[in-house]
Image 1 (cartoon, protein in one colour):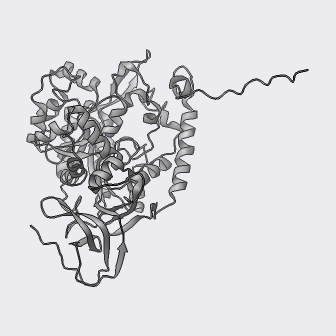
Image 2: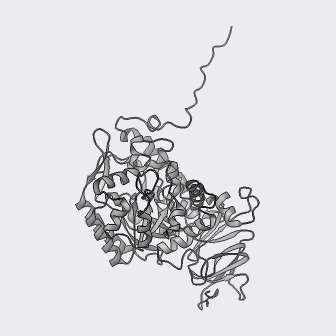
Image 3: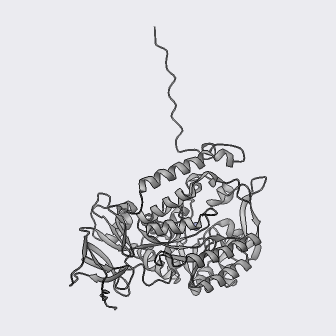
Length: 505
Ligand SMILES: [Zn+2]
């Protein structure tokens, strides 16, 4: 067991956080300290335990609250997701429960796009705000949704906010669009994709390590289904040369699974494994449609063993998929195979605590087993699993030498009610709205439930205006010129005032 104390460098100001509950790491697992303390100086934790024997410069008395290590989202789309919010309870049946296929650009050059009316800065600011405000301190951003010219916006807003961001612009060998009969098709453009890869590499070289190391580069061949073998080879080489992680979407839709089988005779996981893409530096987004998934008609053995052997991580983001009627089968099965599991926040509501709750609930339903996907396992995935995915033993834990990334949650609410185990109370009754304080690298970024960097009410107002503009312009995107409400009926029809009755007599 490692020492729970670390010498404070001369000149560092020390801060002690005291609270009724502290989730502390003992060198091998998380433990709960009743009436505990965390002491940090600069960006590093120096002590966790019951009582600190030295003077500190500042004390944060968190009273009855719960102190957690900063949570890690290994798969986030840090924007407002106007497409995903549009297709809830609806969408095209021929796309077999997939989500984003429903709102791809109408032209392959992206000019007729749902996103055309959106303000990318407002969208990214809102996404990053939500992630931090709800308790994520480190995110892996997929970089594909960032509109052209706004990759630096992502880096600079994350830097201003104080978030740890793993990021690189996405690239692909083919784009999705629809043909004249409205069928989903892929338009290959390998040359444009390879050029985007080169630009992404230059971007990572320029920005990796910015903002005191909080911004880290990432190589993002956006989706396995739209990445050629040559592009994967170059992406893998780039990640190795830059010494950064690589992430992409894999086995995300049934269409991808079926078409991959028809083209290659292999599952999507087997295809990337045979190309030599997998490895401990790789984070696989979703990876739901693996051999043995009940909708794939593919025998059970194979894919999970392959992923486990490679050391790759799966980023499990259940909420977006649950809204499409899709579940991972199952968290427990992946874990039993020895796969490093982590939690992603995907599209919205960008609340990692809600995502953790969904992971527990969908995991139990998937197995019809109340002992599956426990609060302990999901908490570990959102902390230690994410840290392992990133090769960061200094994240996802409160321990001496780890980064001072802390989340303080208020359990003293009706929503939480009575509890014996604060972790189960947090996951099964909680949500991001209960987050009171977020500290990243020793810097307080949320205090008293409010962001310190900028006005979150203004960020909300701006993204609502931007989203309304894009949704109002839906007739320009729809090939038949229909309004959004004509295509996606609202839950309830608009109120109609009764016709005034003429006065009697
Ligand atoms: Zn995604």
